[in-house]
Image (cartoon, rainbow, N blue to C red; front, side, top):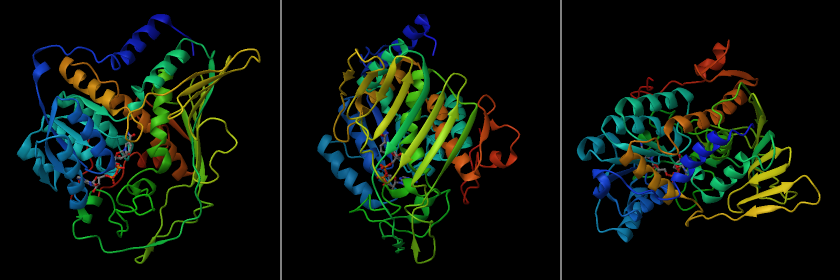
Length: 448
Ligand SMILES: NC(=O)c1ccc[n+]([C@@H]2O[C@H](COP(=O)([O-])OP(=O)(O)OC[C@H]3O[C@@H](n4cnc5c(N)ncnc54)[C@H](O)[C@@H]3O)[C@@H](O)[C@H]2O)c1
């Protein structure tokens, strides 16, 4: 990575803006934003908490297709504010009735595109969760809709404002790890075999047809008291490819985004991915039972002009031989190896024997060790100044594409050549078909 000092100063200034809580300019500084939350589960509740804590936002609507989730979120909201938001099952009804200034979209991944597009078209600025879309052309349509409506769309990749990620980026961009030739992103957790779970009737509080929405209608399974036990809802959708894109789509986008942000790149030239389910076993889907169907391990290789990027995840074995965390990215440079991590901050391991390691601790907010507060401040500042937010929808569309192209190659079983400018797989109509998918009616796939 050649270091252009002027370029570096410009970009680190942009990154640093978000940490300094810049003064709010213009007539909007006293405005209180009317905020609606679409998707009142785990992460949506975390975002709404920070929105209220900013002192600039009042919740006017909570939307969820599961009344149990909505009621739990409403109970939490009552601990932070005396405002009593209205309850809705259908985001379209809420947008028409409430016309919120801001919509938070924290639904499962297959439900990010349509509510985001509807919200910007209804005049709202949007904070949408990562990955921005389930297929690549949905993401392109989201970018087009945001630009056409002239609304700010911030994506929840909060690592772009985490203090240790910002300082680590500066360290790397100053060339202190030397020229970077290779990067490895990884998430290596433990786990084991998977037993099929029995399908059950959806609970009466859940509109399962609306939960599935534009995606295929699978039989229901899930347990709100045990959200990580492997059922689809709540939270488990991550490992069902009808609704998400496995670990590469879930965790992967955070780390792949770090690479694009730090290296100031937009897309690779080629992508190849392989993996499978040797530990979890072949996916099962019958009228009686089902398992997840995402790969239990996966490797992806992305070729950029100046470096090679690899992704690796496992849901077995963990990472017992490595002295860093089980998640993060290694940047391999001519002066050493830099680990960008999460709860253990970052560490630089110099190649020269005589030099000492350099380490920085993280500054994360609780619960769940995140930096939503800083990202929310950046969002409001972008709304009030008209600048692009630090996790602008177009930038995170490119990051999401890395995850989605990895999954596309995994499904095809071969490499793809990516024209990032035109957003197509070069000379490969079969790959091109996977850039979008058929929606289940009456939902219509969004057009860019
Ligand atoms: N940025 C981060 O660090 C981070 C962390 C966790 C989750 N996330 C993202 O947040 C999103 C939600 O994840 P979660 O773990 O909170 O899941 P969750 O299952 O706890 O919550 C999702 C909620 O959306 C609801 N929902 C589904 N369809 C809906 C619709 N059409 N309208 C309204 N509500 C609907 C579900 O009923 C559920 O309550 C995902 O995209 C995930 O990737 C991001």
